[in-house]
Image (cartoon, rainbow, N blue to C red):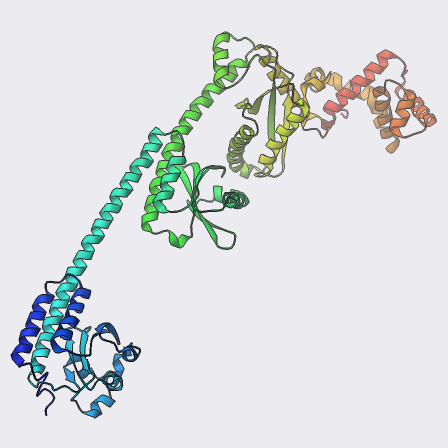
Length: 604
């Protein structure tokens, strides 16, 4: 019997044609490739009462089972198969179990049919004429079944029809997926625009940053933290993190602070811990840095959509920060004007000053002290522009730090110095408190610049509104003296200056030089170490008000040695140490020496 002599002997060729025609016609009505393939399998399963039916998909150079009906696990485990190991004719033309045994042995696909125990089987390609990728339909029986010779042409022709129908279904499915994707994009865009509207609303109407941060976090599904330009956290929305997570992030940022702030790149990436990553974006308006936004994620997680959302949020943050900065700058200008008026010798409108003082939380009727400090740095001329930028940066940091330290401290700049107005409360140790303020300032400066000196002058306590002018002048005077004296002091309280507050204004007059030379040079120029010993001995003797016992104990010398030194001093200076007038002159000489020695004015 020839191979297509009979196929399912109970069915005529007309019946087969009708079945294949109806199947092809119905395939066109289906919406997805999976539906079409399932329908094709079910129609063959029902019509031809087979034991196994499958669609084998050819993709590039590999064969794989796309879908099947019936159970043949051992057969299916052989896939995928390489097309190069199969005869091309077995894939591109109808084939059946009546082909010669020699053909089976040379084709892996046909050999697997035999190994599986398909006694009767046939295949036909579902392939358009010019297609390189196609499917092969396999129908198999566990028992022998007669095949119809005339069916070969029908299966070849309808295989092309099936392929065309499948392509139509595939295009419909692609178009449907495209429409679905467009709809999803539209819905996502509409949702994003709603969120954008919420972001803008918060920026234009709201006073804070939390709602912006929360909305951005929900949009991108990541932890978001907003930092000021000094990398202090302002607001955050944490998603599923540990309580210590924010502290770890802030610690990592502090370690890289200068690089993050001053590197020109707007986007930076940091790693902390073993697998944690943080993206940092600058919030800028023009060339001005406003702050930073941190997002806990890896760089690979940031697709185009997330980046677009983030860029929009950065602009919204910039609007909000700009709005608050304009308010803060206006308030700062008003405050500077108020303090300028407060420091004038004569205040014209006291009621207005009280009104402004209330605005800035300054109680004019309680004791306050005024501090004036300067930051001295020795940098080369080529670094002046960088130094100027750093000083602006430092002052902003100092203001922020002092506000966190004590919100009652008022800060401003005046006459190239930095001014502090600090309530002088009874429950506080004033000297210790100013030491802590100085420490706060020094910590900020030293973290940014090296090789600097900070000097701080502090006034007496104010009692009335008119005292602010006097106390400001006192703080300036104390600052000048502590900057110019040879001692290691960096803080000077005006109350501790005594006569130095007057002597300092003598400047470097010729009379001062002569006065110091007359009373101190004979000691300083006597011998090597001996003259310095006599100089120090006289200073202590005067400080102890002429008490021999206390002077000797302070100097750790015997009383007889002290008397010898005093006799030598008397001989060199040609004066009597017991004379009150001379002792006053000597003490005055030491005061002037302390003020001006660093300029070597005792030498002509």
